[in-house]
Every structure is written in structure tokens, then in C-alpha cells.
Image (cartoon, rainbow, N blue to C red; front, side, top):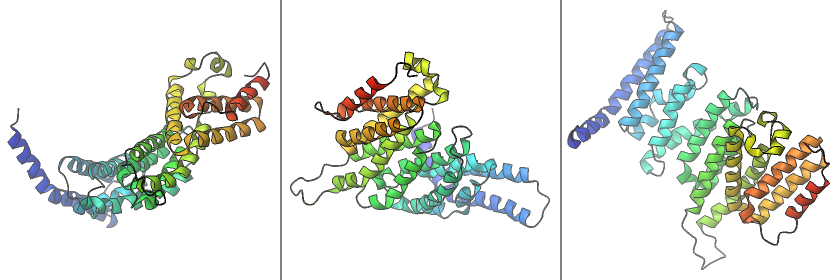
Length: 349
């Protein structure tokens, strides 16, 4: 076993050498770019391999050596990681560097705000690229890679979002997470659902407001007011994602036993149920019932019998997910849903 003092001394050595090491990596990457610019006979594959290894080395130093925030925030190699996202060859390794910066530098520390200033605008600028991707359930690797960056940023900067001083400014990040949640792919949307779970928990952990002066709402009440609309949009998104697709099994299989369907669908449904519970923290039982009731009305007003059936089933699933929030004397949405069941034809798929 290596003595603790020796380990600590080595860690301190790495920290003191980190600035020089990062500068050396940057010089290597810049030298290869300059060679290409001058027309030197350097194969593109060789350059890509070298840049990939350079990014990997930077990632290792960031995770092990506590590179000073002010050094990293202005380092050309680190900032070049955002440009490297444009190509498939370096996308994964460049993403790992950015994610490590999000995780390693606590945004609640004033010394690390320079990292926030460097990272947040550059990630936000990726939104048009994400929106331009075809919203298909298949071939979603590119969208997933971008959504990973969006959601890692949202989770890393949660202390800033769940703060009365920064909440309005940080709502742009919340809107970005809603954009991810709307994606047709469940794999992509699932990343955003995890963000909203952590956001709801961050709000519940905020100190309670002073109730002595109701006319002046405290920080928690102010943030609650700001988040009602995003969580209301999330309810509509969850209701859409709750519907079955052809990949989830035949109507007959679903009618016999929901557990007979794929494991993936079961996990997806659990994630949706949890997200609806998170939404209930902000909308309350009445607000949730209003959203679900409106969705039931839309589902049964138009479409094929199969679409109507899937919409009704998704609405009933949502009612079950928020059962703890439904008042015992509720006499609008739940009775209406029961009546819809009775009106369906016998051969309802």
C-alpha cells in the first residue's frame, strides 16, 4: 500500500504541473493543424488519431490533476473541443472532455464561474443542430450525443437554476431540456426526464420561505412560479410519450397483460410515471387532472379507433401515475374516463 503522504505529494505534484502539461498538449494539437495549413503531406487519418489521443490526455489531466479553472477556460485545446463536435471522428472524445469540465468544476464556487461562462454559451449554440436532426425513433445516435451534453449541463448547473438570483436567466437551460424531452426517441427523451427529476428535488430541498409576509413571496415561491409553465409543458410531452407504438407489441398482447410487453417499454413507462409525479409537485392534483382531461378529449375527438384506444389507455395510465394527487371527491376527469371506457366498442383493440 502506498503511504498516504506519498499519494498526497504526488497529487500535489500533478496539480502544480497541470498548467504546463495542458499547454504542451495544446502545442501538439496546434502544430498538426499548422502543418496541414502549410500543405505538409500529413494524412488526415493520422491527424485525427493524434487529436483524439490529445483530447484523451486532456480528459485524464482534467479528472486527476485539478487543472486550474482559469487556465482551462481560456485554453485553446479545450475550446477547440466544441469545434470538434462538428465531425463524427472526434465527437465522442470531445464530448467526454466537455462532460468532464461540467462534472469537475462546481458551478457554485465563484472561482469556477469562468468555466460556466466558457461552456454554457457554446453548448446552447448546439441547439439549432439538435433541432435540425430528423425527429425519428431510429438513427438517433447524433441526437443522443447532443442531448447528453445538454442534460449534463443542466444537471451540473442545477445550483444556479434552483437559485432566485439566476433562475430567470437559467430558464433557457430548462427550455433546452424540454426540447430534448420532445424528441421522438425514448432514449433521447429519457435523458431530459432525469434532469426534471433532479430539478424538482432541488426545488423541494430549498429552504422554506418565511410565511410572516405572504405579500412578498420568498425564493422558493418565486422559483415555483417560474417553473409551473415548463412542468406544464412536460406533462403534455409525457402524455405523448406514454402512448404505445408498433414496437411495443400488438394490441392483443397489450390487452392481455402489460407485463408481457418488452422490458424497455416497462422501464419507459416507469420513467414517465415518475416524471408525471414530478410535475404534480408544481401543478398540483387539479392542474394535472386538467391536463390529462384535455388530452383525453383530444384523443377521443379524432383519429382511428386504434389511435383513440391508445390515447385513452395513455390517459388512464397517467391517472394511475398521479393517483396520490387526485382528490377523493374528484367528479370530472375520472368519471369521464370511466364513461369513455363504457362507450368503446366490444372489438376495441
